Length: 141
Image (cartoon, rainbow, N blue to C red; front, side):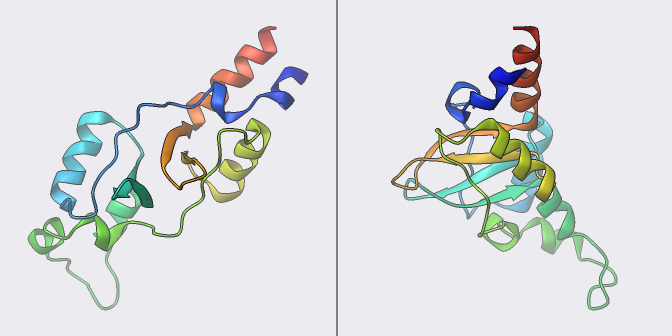
């Protein structure tokens, strides 16, 4: 189990990541969430990650509020990822320890974290499932 203390993101992240552009519609985003069964997509523009959009972000735009008691479904579906994404997001590097990733996921209740390189380009993504697999693997050894 002590092996887990030394594990880094590089050995457990998913390197082939599906991203979305900021101009993608909420309708198309919903279709992607259903098709891929992902919880989040990094938002890329000109090769750089500019935000993250999650299933929660998608659902939040349909929530009833005092100013929007009856959401206009059609109009909301035509909004873009840029309208609903989280532009200030938590990210990690490939050399980040999995213990830190675990701490971030628990503290912020997030399911996946983009992995960014030194040029702010996407290197991969690390998900809860990846951390759970690493814990299980380290416990067996």
